Amino acid sequence: MGLLFIAGIGSFFCLSLIVKIDVKSQQIHFIYPLRFRTYSYEFASIYGYRYKYLPARIDYKVIQFKTKDGKKFTISDFETENLRKIEKLCFDYLELRRGKSFEKLNEQQKRGELRNSKDFDIQQAKDIRFFLILGLAISIFLIGMFLTNPVQLDLNILLFLTFWTVLTISMVFKLRNIQRTIKDRTQQSANPDL
Image (cartoon, rainbow, N blue to C red; front, side, top):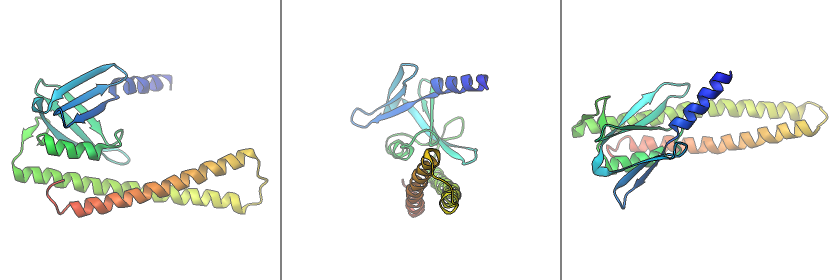
């Protein structure tokens, strides 16, 4: 267990990445905050970006950048909350490519890649929605069990109920956001552009 913990900390240390896209200066900055390293590139120095889709309990999307000096930088929606905003900026200012070799795409292939990306977003949101509904049902069930059984409410039970109530409310808000994502991405799927 100790080795797994150390490996996890090491991965976090090595892989933590912040991406900043500065439209005014036409630059993209890849910042590794825990390694105190920053790589800055002009948009013209970026060879392109591509999508990857990785399997997990809930599959996730990765955007990989390749620079003209051969470096690759990867971010995913697993650890990046604003990946959709970054994705839009990539579409507007960088070249969409595909495959490990970052092959150049014609317009029809680009539309296909964008369609696959939107379809993935919809399916991922539906998977998240399923797990949120399941978690919500379990939370409501647990809260109901505590409220209907005549138990003496002590501090531990009150803390537990407070935690589950806050968790349940946050799941409701997250579920609402997921529904909005599904609706937005479904409407966009007819549009070839992001």
